[in-house]
Length: 197
Image (cartoon, rainbow, N blue to C red):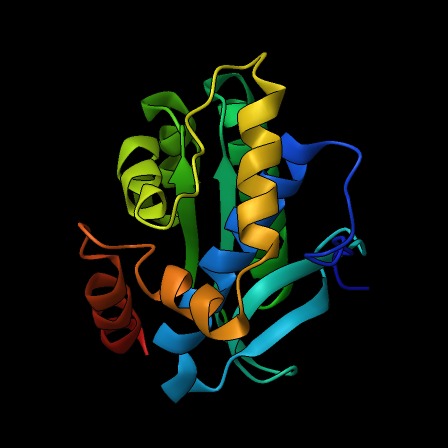
């Protein structure tokens, strides 16, 4: 079952969390464009080597023969970095173990992932593409979307959610298109996929 997020006009109970979810959706939206030529399977459930099901953002290949697993995650606070890295690594590796056709596992990370958290992924054979928090914040600030608020600042989180919730689909597309500005993630990701498959 796909992740359930509030609609952009449905008032959330936690504005900071809602903004974080929307950043994750913006990342997915841009990745969808980057990967369009490969016609990836999106947000499907996959059974791992333990018989557990996981939802992965994008899979290149077929249901019977997955070749590339790509999952994306955004975090605002470093304190969640190791937990999220372990979660991603466990999911991707267990699915790779269950499907011997998989040639590549990729994590596209946004925000405050630490060197230690990225090492967890690299040590498990997962390729990483990371847009750091400051670059992401600068790219979003152009659209008056502020994500670098202090942890106890509820007002900025609410204002950012309110601005995001009024954007048209075309404006959301533009924000997503500019999300990875200042990085070589789109080109490097496509290059890696071509190299592996």
